[in-house]
Image (cartoon, rainbow, N blue to C red; front, side):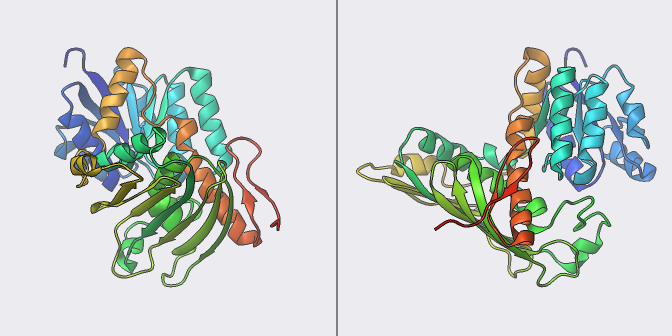
Length: 348
């Protein structure tokens, strides 16, 4: 084991597999323990991943002094409980998306991180794809000129069996929402990462197909802090599923990409074909690996998380504002702190 950085995983559901495989792929990381309230699931997960110690109570995992980082992969509405307990136990935390589903608990998590000195990062793996990184570099370099329009098309299909597969899915209490908070949060994060902070939203959400308590269809009109405008469209109600698609348009160029690769990259007066060739295809195979490697650097070198908590909360704050706007039937200002979202009537 030597000087490898040691990990524990709390929650042994589907997404925990991504964390375990990334830890196994890293030469600098070791998985020492896992926990799940369903003890049989914890034991089966441990058996499949090198037989780390399995616990039915995550608090026993946190008692171990030999674990440096805890991956939180429980249902979204339980993220704060586990993450805060882990940080108070002296562990750094890598949390699955969304960081949390309630603004007050987001505030509490960040406060605990700052009080304990333990780092809190969130997984938004779409940021680490070659095309997303190339798009970010182009935007930051000013290649597209002044940004004026940005949109995210997040059109997914989920079956009735998917929603029946786990009793926490599509509930306000544990999933925090539907097509936006669960499936669409990655695209919301990408859009605000590329375009800048979203200042105000006007939205309509609906449940049109599935027998669930949260939305399966949503549309939001956006006003960015820069003055640019945009749209988010999200659904789990359509068939067939469409590739996630992001568009960023500026006064000097446009960049459009999806799960299939770059669809357009045009800059006035410039040949960008060589750059397009480097990022024409997406590579999701590496998945969570950059986040595990980053947490190794957090422990060894005092690095910052790849997506720190204050940055990772922004997509959640936007989605909460969208829900508020739909409920109230009016525009809502997005905030990222204690004050919460506030409604603002339309102005001519």
